[in-house]
Length: 192
Image 1 (cartoon, rainbow, N blue to C red):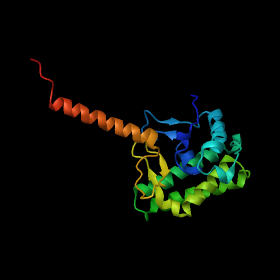
Image 2 (cartoon, one colour; image 1 turned 90 degrees about the horizontal axis):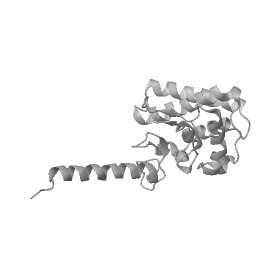
Image 3 (cartoon, helix red, strand yellow; image 1 turned 180 degrees about the vertical axis):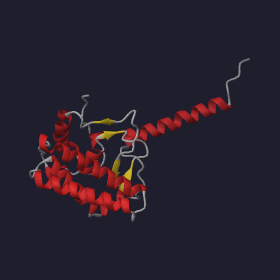
Image 4 (cartoon, one colour; image 1 turned 45 degrees about the vertical axis):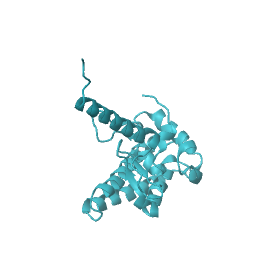
């Protein structure tokens, strides 16, 4: 399936989160889509990241993931998602979280060993490590609509959606529709 890598696809606020978000509707098996299943789409992601990723000033142009590093890169994507999502949803001091952190560090190290300086794999690993060891870690959230991971950079740390223009508007439109429907069913029109 071909589609465009738009700015919305980079709403995570960090390259590692944007890569993790390349699986759409991750927890709905019937609707889930892996945007990296198609090799040209993964290559196009590397090009688009240089234009749309919030961290683009740190890396500039990215080299696509080589065919030999693809499996390791996808393992890194899953480790990023697994660790940060589990950290948000579970006790911060449980054994599973420590195991997921070890997996993240191991896959990041592997990508740093094989990826060149400007490779998507190496820069994703760098991004994940920056998230782990910065104040940004406390600002990572899960979108209340699509489930993507994102960095909440709002002043009062109250952002609920990865992208207000997409997910926020969908939630608000759905709420408005349900309220209008409930009001209409509570007060049906009278016919005389």
